[in-house]
Structures are given as structure tokens and as C-alpha cells.
Amino acid sequence: MKTVPSLMFPSSLTSLKTALHFCASKNNLDIARILLAQKASARIRDKRGQLPIHRAAAVGSVPMLKLLIGANSPVNAADIAGSTALHHAISEGHGDAALLLMKAGAETDKRDTDGKLPIDLAPDNKIRDFICQSAGREGIDVARE
Image (tube, rainbow, N blue to C red; front, side):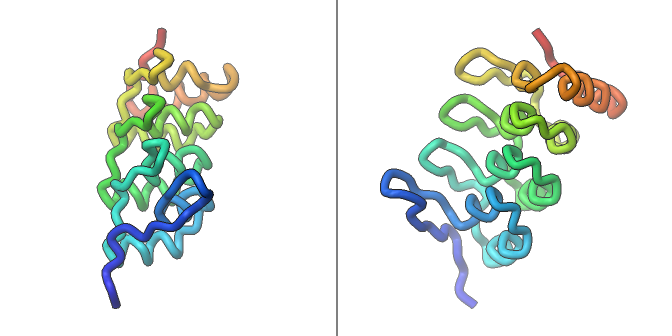
């Protein structure tokens, strides 16, 4: 079988993304495993500077995040808006995904280009409290204003 380091395909007339980005967005673990087994890179950025891990975090896919972290995807990489995967997970209300990222070493004190910490983006207090309490039980300090 041929190695597939950076399968690229047009997602629109104005941007490109890899097949791995698409799999992460759609939570297609089977195809993502095949792509990674064929040496697809989890470190290629799309036009917005996002890695597949940003997409997996945005949809809250814990299994996809585990797969990408296992493929050495950098958990603290920021996109062009300065957002890390942790920013994306928290802003979409995915507490379990956020906790996994923090356990994998995601920095809670990284600010995006608007100066926001990941926890600042929690959609409501219930999610913010869940993340902070769950992290606390794991011995993780969540940076706050």
C-alpha cells in the first residue's frame, strides 16, 4: 500500500484541508485509523491554522482526541485565532473532551488573540463548574481571570 503523508482535497474554492481534518470533523474513527496507519500527518494545518485535533475538540470526540494525541498531535498548538484544542472543546461545551486534553498536558493559561483563556469561553456556569471540578479531582489547576 502507498504511503499517504498529506492527502489534500478541496473543501471549497477558498480553502484546503486534509482527509484527516475531515475525519476528525465527522468523528470517523475507522478512516482516521487507516490514514494514520498509512503515515498521514496529524500535524498539517488547514487555512485557518487548525490541526485535526482542533476539529476533534470542537465536535467533542474523546475517542478521536485519544487517537490524535496517540499520533503525537500537539495539544497546545494554536490556530490563527490563537485558539488551542482546549479553547475549542470548552467553547463548544465539551467538558469530557476538555478534561482529556488537560490530562494530556493542554495548558489552561494560553490566551487566544482576544485575550481569552479557554475557561473564559465556557458557554455557561454549569459547564465551567464541571470542567473546573473535574480538573481539580485530577489535580489540574484551571487558570481563570
